[in-house]
Image (cartoon, rainbow over all chains, first blue to last red; front, side, top):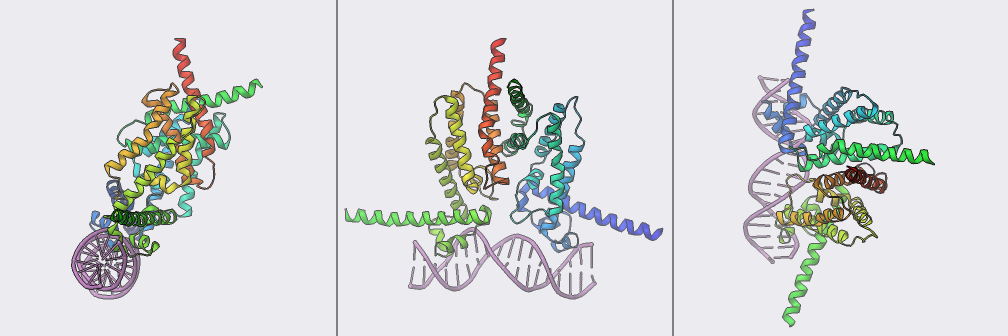
Length: 202
Length: 202
DNA sequence: GTCTATATCCAGATAGAC
DNA sequence: GTCTATCTGGATATAGAC
């Protein structure tokens, strides 16, 4: 029992160190850009030297991959916590709002997860699969509104992506584009209502 | 007269060298990414050594700025050549189609102009002003359709940007998102028709 | 598991001969 | 206006002492 406790303590310490390193990496990435962080800086920020990081991450890219996994996990948690609305449209609205808010509140995290901001880095297949799984619920929520088909999903993704990327790029501290989310969804729903009523009339 | 001709020839040669350097830089950027090009590679591609480039560009960033200026000039030329349609909506449609096609046909050029793909590089204020001017015609074309206001323009930009960025990132050789342009514009126009008819009814 | 020292590599930029 | 040689700096990563 005593031995078991000692082991747990050691491994908890290790995990804490690892978490501290990642936190420092995120902090530097937010200040200087994802591609600009160096192992020296990251190590310095947690009171270590660069070579010591190799006891915690096999390489710099392994560190990026761990950051990527954190981002995916946070997104996944956020989206699964999204409120059910009083009808399927409201539920979808909540999901889109949650996604947009998540992206905008930490642009660097958004970039790491959904753009390719670090030359030479790609997430490992497992972490990438986690990301796809986190996003797959959107299709379900969309289909629950009665809107089906790949085109509709692609169009909705385009609207969402456009809002997020313009917001992050041109007005990171404001709401110039994010405040358009509800209007954009109204527009989107109305478009498919018209399509449906055209089909009925025929 | 003879002296004048000699000078012209020399300066034409210089311009040709400069153009060749930029062409090589674009080529390498398309193959390895904008941020990954090095002066040694660029020089090698035109049969020179790296230091010689400094006779043509004051720095690496100056070279990026020249590339940026070329991209803006090409976009400007393309958009000013866009067809007038039979009505303002058709004209706007043509502009959006032209813009999307321009972005997709050379993703690297699009990235340099509208994203921030090179850490540490920003266009000089003059070149950036050129870019804004090239894009300003969109507002005019939109207002000609009777749709006014900053929100409408922002929403249209979001749709366009979303289509382009998803297309470039996820299906660079295909048309998965670009083929949605017309449907997206139908949706957009219908949205503002409804808004207008609501106003009339009141 | 942290350190110092170092290997290895490659970048942008400059000096000065021709 | 091109070259060779070099400066200066910084990166990831490894070796081995403690």
